[in-house]
Length: 178
Image (cartoon, rainbow, N blue to C red; front, side, top):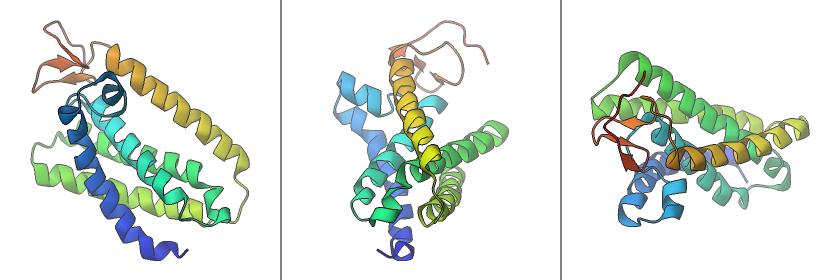
């Protein structure tokens, strides 16, 4: 499969997938969707949304790749998600944008940079077996961490939704440390 042809669809599907998956928990309220999808508008839940979206889209893409490209998919997926999360958090924490257009441009910029790294890893001819195993372990750990901290978040501004006054799934009126 020619990866260059699917890259625009890959970028668009991640961008649209982020907005689609952000609505899932609003419509389907149960403990499983709370673990996987964002439950509030905190920075932590946004990071979870980015990670899960990229993971789901790469799971679908896995079956379209040839056998050599498949061997690098886990590492490429993890690096792509980590790149998007890092770029978004740096811009968000430094500039604190409130304009939706600026936020969407930051997300799109992170997706494009992450896709470039994803592409370079997928087409790599080097054996990345050890890094791929590390990426599997890190991905599993990230999913467990997202699940645990959705139900038991730390009273910190990273987990606090300032708009809805929520900490994870619950209303919170206590003190939030920065």
